[in-house]
Image (cartoon, rainbow, N blue to C red):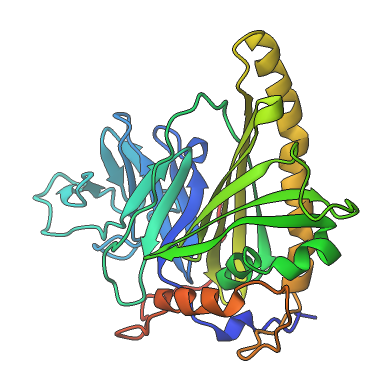
Length: 338
């Protein structure tokens, strides 16, 4: 029986959404991903050009993600072998006749820190804000995970300011160092995590200090630092709507120690503890996922002291919902994705 998740009643948000990791779209590879009820086709050319396009060939409608290939710098349709250049223009037919004045629909994308983000807007508008590129900090390759969950992106992002659930659900004490600051499409905050059974009023000094930035409703970037042991953790958590009430929760975690001496030991230890860090991220979020699966969205919640700035968050989040200018005629049925 399908869980009665009320997320299905809420529209898809606008913004940037992670659809793959960089390693999933290697040279010459063609990959299909689902976003907001539609397919997006990703491919990378031998020159390293990464592109995202609408899925259907403008010639006779073949799905480019099912049998499409990369030849040179061009994407080749599996049906009549029409070829499309990186700018989307048709440059060759499969039978050496002059190509028609046809063009693929390009989708705006950004490749940041090993993740591929594409832009989605209900009215077809282009990007109005960007995801900041974090400064290089010699982090090793991140460990990535992805799973499909029953949730709306708003369920995930509201969790960031729902302070009241950390102790009862995650058994984690939360000390707010800097309350959420809203600036355009960004929501920035800082806090410290400790053990829920700690009797002090604040988290211990050894506990990692977390700084997070949310970009719209689909992307949360965080860095945790523990100066006393020279630990830094970088984490991306991204929630991508794929169909009504369903989303892909994608996470990457990477760890490093900032020791100036014993660098070989620092690298070995970082590689060792990155595994439990990544597992802990998945394990903790699984507790939220179990709640979201059966949750109803309450428009006028009866809040209590300690709940966090939920209504301030909701006023900020409202900017990412827009009414489609036309019906989504190109909405597609579910597609099996590689």
